[in-house]
Amino acid sequence: MVRVQAPAQNGAGRLWDVVQTLQFAARKAQHGQARLPFALYVRNDAHRPRLVRLVAVCGPPDLDDPQPAIAVMPPTRIDRIALAGPGWPGQLTP
Image (cartoon, rainbow, N blue to C red):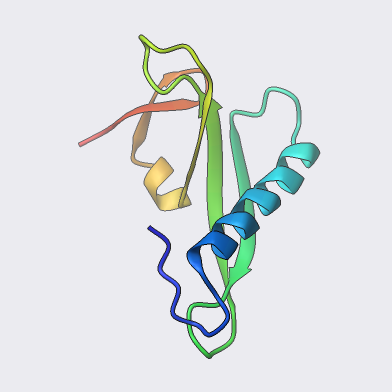
């Protein structure tokens, strides 16, 4: 869930910003890159925007479902994930 408390900000606009920034980062990525880090400035209150770093990975969401999916998460979360396949987080490690 996107938490937005600043005036003139909403969840749909925030999602648009994340997806557009991811699109620009994907165009600059090297072929076969497993993890795609990107960052954008986010304003959650009336103060200055802060830089938020995210990581995107693409692959099958489950070993039984080979259709590709994109997951976007903070880098701290991806560090706790075990890769089930080439570049895809399969399950959380304890």
